[in-house]
Length: 145
Image 1 (cartoon, rainbow, N blue to C red):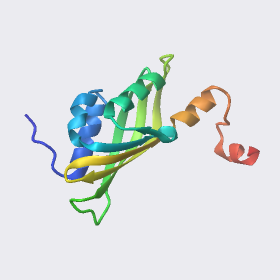
Image 2 (image 1 turned 90 degrees about the vertical axis):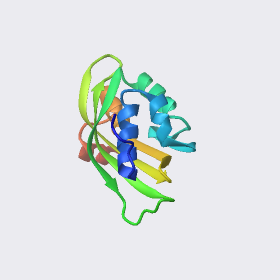
Image 3 (image 1 turned 180 degrees about the vertical axis):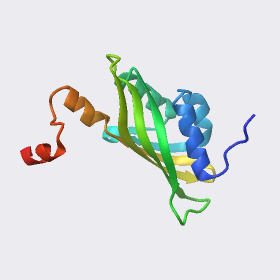
Image 4 (image 1 turned 90 degrees about the horizontal axis):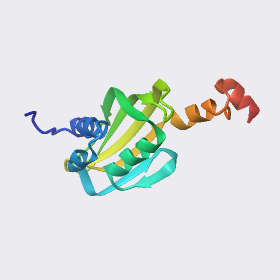
């Protein structure tokens, strides 16, 4: 059996591994009872299961390709900031595959538990493009605003 993660970055990586299975119940052991989640679009959530439920509506399935996990210098046991950066891959509800969808997650880890999670990704923009509601050229899109 692997040892429990002890660094803030390792805690975030294990949390994400479990959340992407998805196994939000197992991921719950890495979060504070007072967890605050701000998901894409500014959605407020309190539980890892809410993230999994939201993803189940937006995607047929989705996983993270974690490219790097960065710990911000100067953190303490009381609060360390950790970023997870990479891309999403999976399938939309119609089962069309996608990959390369950028994401950035920001975590606050306090005394070995995640207390805050903020999530950003390109999915909304990609869905707008698929629906013909956004230009696929950001330069042109900016000129039309």
